[in-house]
Length: 376
Image (cartoon, rainbow, N blue to C red):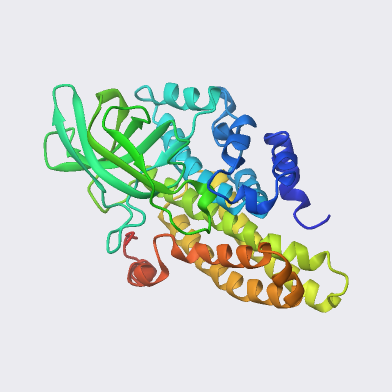
């Protein structure tokens, strides 16, 4: 089986026409701020990828989704990163369906059937803040919850149909506060989008600023998690496992695009080509192990800890693979096109997503000593 053939085959099966459409567009066009990638993803039915068939989705397993993200990353890193945030949100909503309460199944079915895109307004990107720390303030009133705050960067900012945002609300039992997820329609009064992402890298992900000013969210669009701020419940645990898994696959895909160029170059010695192949496929196999655990049942705290270990392990693998691939491709390839340098720079992005290895050192050490896992 040729390199990336398995991953691209699952894209063809679940999202017909997408791989061919992406391949027909030059990489640097896909990565620009006016990229057609997100619309091509939408047109192929991508928003319903991880939604069950019973809710009019594609019914992809975690293993399928991982392979899809690697394939997309090899065609357009921006698209892979942006859609990971959508899938992370959808996996959380799908988890709520399993509880059998509320109208969450209608929301999920609506996203899948109408190919709507869901952006994530969690606290990613705020220096010094944990990913579970709400970035929005909420005021509860008789009509629902009014939310204010800023999310930057926010992938899919200009193409989203819904925004998910974490907020603290009074507990359902009347004691203390608990974390909730608000679903905010993109057309809501008080929601605005402005430019933020000034880098030329990954600009196709539409990572701009979303500002909420006293936006009303009705009670039916507020999903309670029953977890205090900074702590994980089962649903959040599963969501973050999905996040780590798919983001790992996305950046591995970007690096795989470089590896693929080396493997197709017969002037590169076989020993060097095989060395890169082993490194790339070894990293993917580790990620596939996490995906299979998700598919076996609801991932627990141990799965989350292992998904973080795999993510950091893949970061290290990328730090070896990418410079070697660039060196083997040679100066002529580097100088004659922006693609090699661009892919090399994008591949380093995995280390920039929370939670960083440095912030998770103490929590992982405590978990190793049989303590509960916290997300820094």
